[in-house]
Amino acid sequence: QPALPHSNSSNELSAAATLPLIIRERDTEYQLNRIVLFDRLLKAYPYKKNQIWKEARIDIPPLLRGITWAALLGVEGAIEAKYDAIDKDTPIPTDRQIEVDIPRCHQYDELLSSPEGHAKFRRVLKAWVVSHPNLVYWQGLDSLCAPFLYLNFNNEALAYACMSAFIPKYLYNFFLKDNSHVIQEYLTVFSQMIAFHDPELSNHLNEIGFIPDLYAIPWFLTMFTHVFPLHKIFHLWDTLLLGNSSFPFCIGVAILQQLRDRLLANGFNECILLFSDLPEIDIERCVRESINLFRWTPKSATFRQYAQPPRPPADSNGARSSSLSCFSADYQEAPRSDLSRDSILLDDLKAEVSPRISAEDLIDLCELTGPSHSKTPVKKTKPSKPKLLVVDIRNSEDFNRGHISGSINVPFASAFTAEGDLIQCPATATLQSFKGRVVVIVGNAVKNTAAFAAHLVKNKYPRVCILDGGINKIKPTGLLTVPSPQI
Image (cartoon, rainbow, N blue to C red; front, side, top):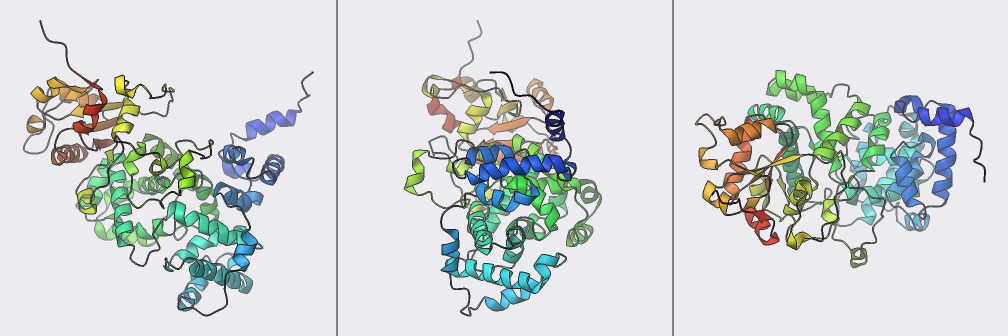
């Protein structure tokens, strides 16, 4: 069968896919092709769910953004009937707060500022409050609703369904009456991510006392809708919805890195002023950098106890969409094993500057294989997989009795000077040569590994993390090696 003739325009279209997003969105022919493609795929949803995910990774046509987001959020079923059945008229105590918030929410937009827009806002927000009796209306829920209402202005039921699917995925339990433990855990993990990706900035912000509690709660509680205008949110969420519940941490770090020079040059008061009216952020750059940060972050480093609702038993048969990459799949959803990360007390988490990673992550990143780990699938060589160095901080006797293959031994007791600088020796020279790659600290005592990691962060070492459970987690796997005796 002869190949179908190709017009020149098809070559132009594939070339257009590499152009900046803002140009692609204004290219009529490119948009027409994308709309025809997405329209066909969306008509076959959920059967074509994987294909929708694949195409959305390239870009999402603005005209079909609302329904595409719904597909990415897994919205299906009788959404109209469900929405219509909710009582949106009977007065409730939250009505007053909703009435106060709506006239302040994205009112530069003519749709959302119109009387009809206000009425729709009221109904969708009220429907969410009434249908989630275990949760409460927090200020910021209106901002979270805005993108969904704008994109589905003539389909309130879909706006409500999207919002109801979005919150448990990215903001699970953020809207509890007492949400302090959830928020505190989230902000602590965010602090660890800043230290992991940008230790110099982390050191400065901690020294001046400019902690995430002072600026990041509106970011995460509204998934950035309170701080960015709608046209920026659309491009940000096009990528956010493809990522898992940990991706917002990387967006937060990417925003800080755009403001990095100003933050490093200023003290506490100036930083407070800077964030009270956030400067112009290049959102395309923010998206690019957050994806790169995400690739450098071990999956388990952002583990949170309160990240997700308990999974229903029906979900445990692995019937998860096969299109989900490591970017989309949540670490919390993976089956747990003895090598997974364990939950720790919030106070213990707060005491650690660097994130912990699980033993399974370490085995995966080191590409280790051994007798009891022979079920490990053959590793695909992905350029995005970071190269890493394991630093074993036990004394040399323990190290020689068994250690992780390829690890170096820098005993904690003799690693740092009184001022906190690294003492020069062959092992620390190797450590310095790995600066910029992932460094995993392994030891016996959590206190020592956490302190060693904190010293490295003080010395501006990026991508430092701690092995959760220490060397004892690795011992049962049969992956430790013993050096051959010197004859």
